[in-house]
Image 1 (tube, rainbow, N blue to C red):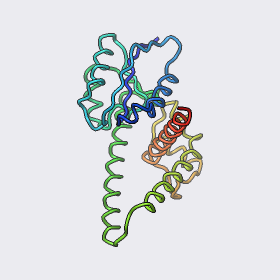
Image 2: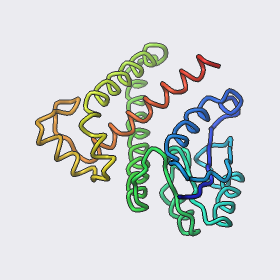
Image 3: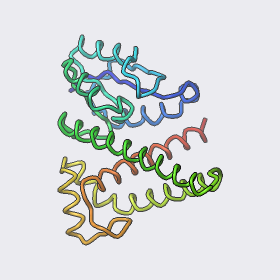
Image 4: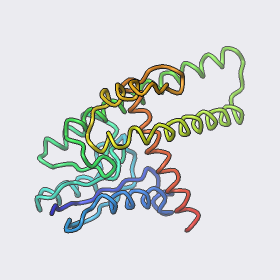
Length: 225
């Protein structure tokens, strides 16, 4: 039996009022908890993940420390987008549990956070470069750009879901991303671009599937609201 203090975060007050985002996080947390586990408290924050000075988060951390409980979050990005911040909290002596990565060790959480942080940086750089190049060519970005971005996102989601049955069981067993990539290459499965899998490729697929599941959950919550 384990004891937990849950921390949920949304980025905007609109999300907080509507319940969108919170509903998906609560669903993940409920699925994670086992019979006999105790959820001592739930702290909800409406603030950007870029900020470290979050009142409710630190209240949750203090609560967890007082009762020798683990801090439970639905997804790593609901906690923080920075490896340095995750390390800082772990240095406080608080064990961190992530609902959608139930078997992840502290070391694996650092690796996932580092990969996600680097991926966001690269995406930002590529986006700025692409927009600058388009502006040079006189391209006017607007509706067509949004349609294309949505099309690319949908294609990525379809591919990720097609290979997910090969990846999911290995993730549950705590197999490394590199080992999963080697397994997929051994099955002679091509990436969406027709190449070979690497650890980062697998990580991108995991993030895509997680985001797709969250989008679906939030659309369902909105429809039932």
